[in-house]
Length: 282
Ligand SMILES: Nc1ncnc2c1ncn2[C@@H]1O[C@H](COP(=O)(O)OP(=O)(O)O)[C@@H](O)[C@H]1O
Ligand SMILES: [Mg+2]
Image 1 (tube, helix red, strand yellow):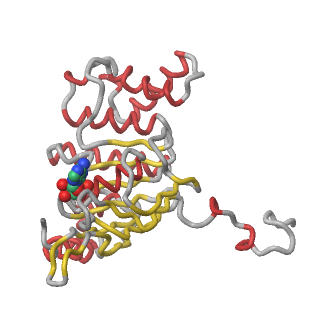
Image 2: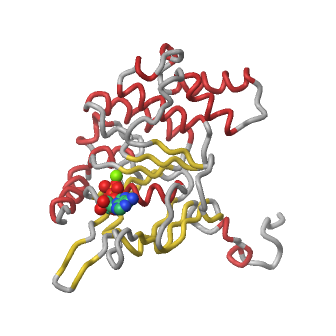
Image 3: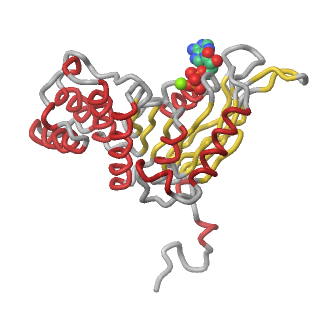
């Protein structure tokens, strides 16, 4: 059989940058708002295609700043971000972003909020194509009954679902989620977490998500990045950065309600909680 990479060449000799491991590559990222006091520096990590990575750290350590740089909405002071082999240089429909608050257009119905994004992504589609696409993603988050309602007629949980449907509907190469369930009550959050997990498993979506909820990270993430805050030390100011990356070894078919019955759950949870209580919050 013919070797796809060419006769006489080893695979590693012909791989180009696109095929190197790491669908998303973050290299040596730093961000300073004040001179000589970077919020974080030397932040490097990769995400494989289809991987779900959560980042946890105290308020102010720079999580949202990193996510905004990945989204192309902010620029780093130093370092680089590559997605699918190309450097991120601005916002793109290749990345879907869900913010902490829903960011829907209040004067548009659910259907039209999502259609707006879908039309930007595929401008040549007919109205019927756009509407069919919108309907399927609204159904995916269980909101078909509310498709012609405006955001003001929806609960907080429903609005976040619309945001998720909109982000998935543009079929981005990557989803960036900034504490998307932070403002929701525990019950609603739980339901949407289970929904998100099911959708991500089905679509094999690559996801980078900020959360402050340890159980949420353990439920959703394949790996959990623990981030430390910048702080003054006897040796001078030390920027924040990645303290540790924890691999989630729990079985992938986990459900929120059964998490605490899984072997290894408490060790994982205690490890992360210990990290969060050990490090000084700002
Ligand atoms: N536009 C800005 N100007 C000045 N400081 C900022 C700005 N944006 C964020 N910061 C500061 O950078 C740090 C990290 O912010 P952020 O990324 O929002 O943290 P996190 O999301 O982890 O809570 C904070 O100390 C914040 O005050
Ligand atoms: Mg934040």
